[in-house]
Image (tube, rainbow, N blue to C red; front, side):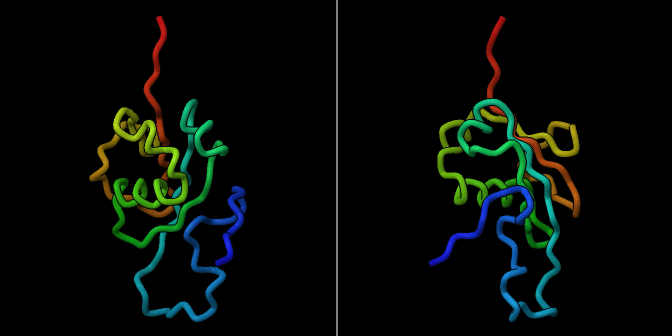
Length: 109
C-alpha cells in the first residue's frame, strides 16, 4: 500500500490520484485544517488540506483526522473546534473552503 504525501500541497483523502473516480459520485469539498499547540506537536503539521464528501460534519472530519493522525486521540476528549474562527460543535456541517481549527486545552495563569 502506498502512502500519500502529507505536505500542505497535497490533499489528504483526495481522490485526485484515482483516475477512475466517477463523476456521478457525491461532490467533494476541501477543508483547511489548522493545528495549534499540542495538536501541532502530535501531527507534525501546522495546517493541512482535507477533502471530504459534501454534507460532512466536523465530526466526520475528526474521524478522518484520527485515522490519519492517531496521536490526536491523546487530546481528543479535551480539545475544542473552531470553524471559520468561531467555536463550533462536531455536529456542524462543513462547506467548501471552510477552515477548521483544532484547539487543544490551554493552561496557564
